[in-house]
Length: 112
Length: 112
Image (cartoon, rainbow over all chains, first blue to last red; front, side):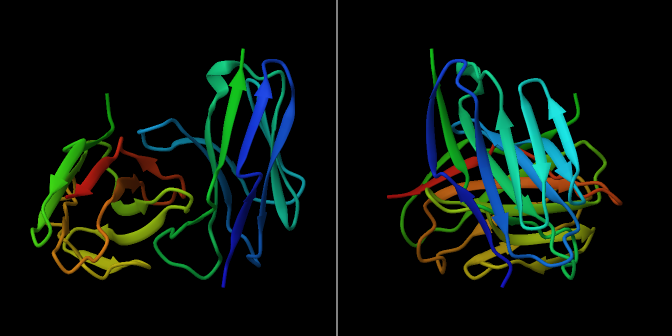
């Protein structure tokens, strides 16, 4: 069974304290790995798609990287407005209709 | 602005009642999805539809029903057969050829 595991479950940082979130997966033949940001009581907002090992994407203070078994979301010098839950999802190779498998998320809190 | 509108934002239901959650999109997307989100769990797929008048069960379809009579609309009915319906429900859509999902703001259902 395809699995997606995110760690840590929760992370508390001070403003400016850089760190990384992890997303490990057991899917073979990945058709895409996705990162979303979700604010409390709202729907997820798309951040990045990664397709192959070695690929990197950046957006402001966020950088996503991908290896054959995991992805990292690096947060450089975070600000309080970066506080949110970050979700990782994978698109397995044999599924139809873009059925994504989601991880449980990492809840990030950035204190001023 | 194009997007996905979910209504109502909050809904309270007595046990034994059916309720219908609305999802409307003006993105001209072909595929639409319903996910359920519970605390500490990843998003779980309830139903999805890739074209009008056609839909498929997801991983947790029992106790739910959907229809897709129009491209723009994909309502979800939570029936009395759903044993634990209290959750946050998210509707999403995707255009053909792309794997990125666009989400609505969600509907929170509470069973009293």
